[in-house]
Amino acid sequence: MSESKQRREDRTSEGQQDAAKELEEVSQSPGAQKDPDRWVTGGESMTAAQASYLKTLAQEAGETVDPEMTKAEASKKIEQLQEETGRGIDH
Image (cartoon, rainbow, N blue to C red; front, side, top):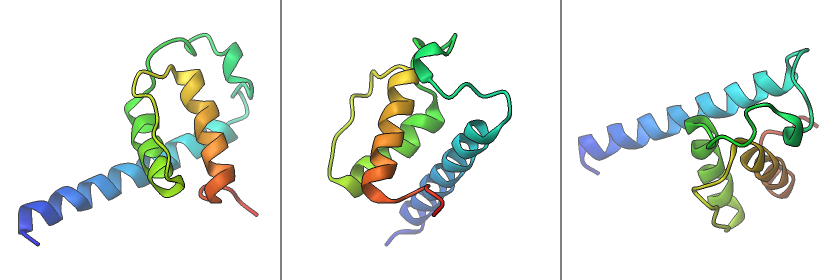
């Protein structure tokens, strides 16, 4: 594998780990609303962190995801794919 390709893969992996950590922190913060449908910004485009984490989860689940999802839709899809893959869920 070329050095540049390895660096790209390392950055992608780090970005996905950062995205997963960010989403976990947000979901555990005391002021976080549990229902994404009630988020004030839920209708906005999903964040880069959500997109990165969704890509990882979808690959593991053998699914594809709509890149035009809203924040709320992405959050729900992440929860669904976490259930399917077991990733990101504390047991």
